[in-house]
Length: 186
Image (cartoon, rainbow, N blue to C red; front, side):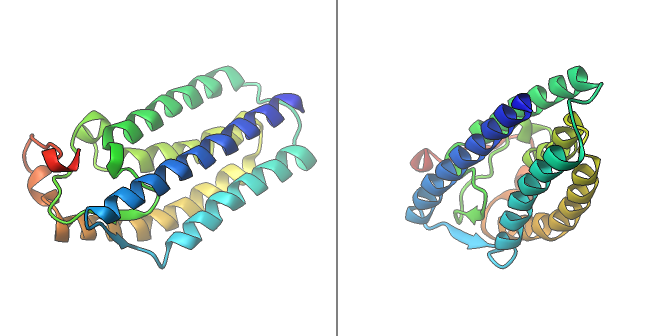
C-alpha cells in the first residue's frame, strides 16, 4: 500500500532527524557539564521503538490491509500530536534529548507544553503508539506497544524526575510559576 509506505518513510526520517538533534544537544549538554541518567534502560527504549516500526510494517503489510474507516479523525489526531511533538521539542531547545541528560544547576524549562504538564513528550509518544497503528488497522501493534510503553515509562519517568530533582531547581519550579534558562546556557 503506497500510502502506508510514504507514511512510514516520513516517520522513520522524522525519528532519524530527531536522533541527530538529540546527539547535537547531548554534545552541547556534556560541554555544559551534563550528566546522563537511566543509561541502563535506554537501549531497551530504543529497542522498543525500533520494534514498534518493525511490528507496524509487518502487521500492515502481511495481516491488515487499508486505512481505518476512521482514518480522517485519526489523521487529524496524528497531525495534532506532531504539532505537540514539535512544540515540546522546540520548547526544550538544547535541553531536549532522547536520553536523560541533565545539566547540573540549570533551571528547568517550564514554557510551552511544560507550563501545563511535566512530561508532555511522553504523553505524545504514548498517544502516537496507539494512533499510528490504529490509522492502519494494526490493532496488535497498538495494544502491545501501548503496554510496553507503560512499562518503559514506569522506569523512565522516575529516573528522570530523580535526576532533575537532584541536580536542578525541578522541585522549586513545579511549585512556582516561573522558569527560565540561564543566560549562559542559551
